Length: 118
Length: 356
Length: 99
Image (cartoon, rainbow over all chains, first blue to last red; front, side, top):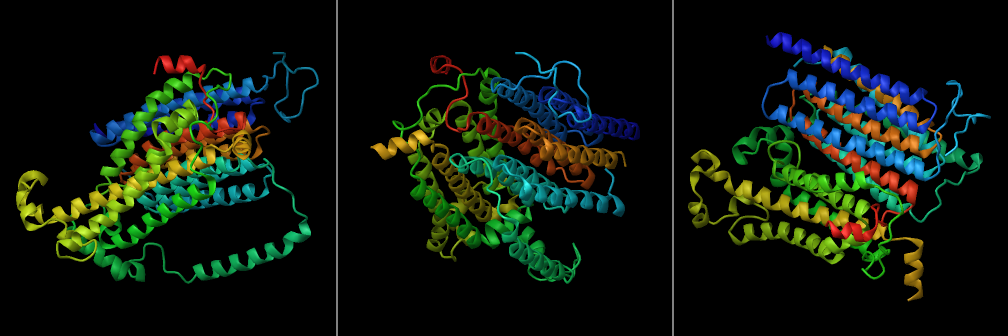
């Protein structure tokens, strides 16, 4: 029984790590600040949830489970708020999302026809 | 819980150190000061992780909190009035400093090769005084965290010196930058025109939680990782969060600059006062065994700590408690004073002060 | 072993974030990368607590989860508004009314 819990917990941890890698790859490859914010914040909180749940399954139950729950609570509270504030600041400073077709390679060059209108 | 095999540990160390090297190069080469500060934050985080890999919990704690927390905020305050970009220097003027850096770095690497292995029990650091501290802490002090025992009790005088140094930094910053903007000179309570409702609600939720957590870290210093320094910095971060979201004026109404300075003084007085009480009761300076007179110790119910054998540790426990409290007060007040000194500087405030 | 795989995955993700922090054309990219890096560090610290068998590391993860937020807000406020002192919230009257 404990062995099964270890394996399941380990599986959740690996799934969380995989989600984080996907998010980081998204932050590297997406063309615009807003899409990158989307990738980073989604996968951060999702990956954190999976990982912390997996760690909760693994370890001794008790104070450690409570602390893991608190870490999860703080990450869920602060990470979306920070992303919101960042997107708000980016938008209010005039940064507009890129709309239209774009190439992923060379994503930071200005596109001739697809700057979005506010 | 599995133990790491040798290869995995080595790979982790190499990966973290590579990240440090890459970050260091990026900090040196970047043109924007904000990017440099940001990359230094990430550098501190990787350092904290690497310190954890080396099993130094207290140091990693301090590095994460100070290096990646308060250092960033104070550095941002420092570049408030400067240009945001680094001035490019002609490469010919960089040759001699570069050569100097390479020579000194080479000498350091050569010296490192002569150091004992990591964690070697026969090394000088681990065999004489270090080993004796590990062996006698349980009997002398009874605190599970040996780091706090050494910091607070065996080398308490050193820690008093550190606290006084931090206090001197507080005085220095307060003298040079002014005592923070007085209420009349503080920026008017106009907002920045945007709607940050989410931030306001989350900040209202978080500020008391962070302060509570600072107190947890403070009082659990002798059980786990933590202590007065980390707790002081965390508490200052909570006050800084209030200032960031609600404006410096509101924060200075809640925690005035004068109160911060007084608390810093009281922290040092508390620390030194504990030492003097020990002298008054017949022991040496900061010798906590003499903190309580025998009459006071007889009044403490012996079952309070769990078993009667621990009664002779009361002096140590209370001594460490009081000095950690002193450290908390001084460190928190110093960080708040430094933040007030930096954050209140805007071009308008300086011009206003120059006009009056 | 699975924990080791989790640690390796997180280290890879952190390296990719560093690339974005160095490369990001605008400062918002860099602030985003730093915030995300901080969250991944929190997870890595908690994982290493399990790997090395020391539950005390969870305290460090907990503290940094809170401090990461404050650092991100400070960086964002500095870059966007160039001031650390002015309040971020809506009108002052509204602020005072609900305490």
